[in-house]
Length: 173
Image (cartoon, rainbow, N blue to C red; front, top):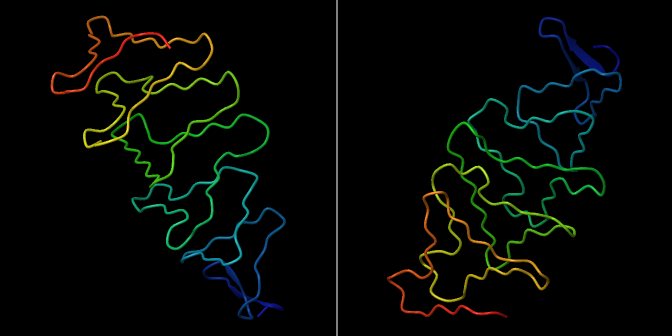
């Protein structure tokens, strides 16, 4: 025992001698845990890259169980924040479930949103085949903006599916 610490020279470990003591490093040392790392009062990690579940096939869960607080990612007040989800090497799926709430892409003035910018095959669908009520609306805004439908070089724009019984209205607002 070294003061308040137990040292295991064979395993290169230094552990608190008293149960419940805190462990901290302020001189650049590394704290490594070979078991489950748990905490009750939150965690603040800053200063470098943070990798969760690196090179692992286990799920990464955030705010699960009975948690009801918000999850904030890149919500800083200044600077440029980029969020990247998925990969370009294989199949990646993103499922966003909002219950009875809304899903909103909301940015500052002059923001642009691109959906499917790198699609080379496949498709983009707005609305679902099991939608029994409600509507899918595409708006051009209240200014001079336009809605442009542009097919690929050999594509076709189809307005109205042959299975539908509704109407198609073309006109100005």
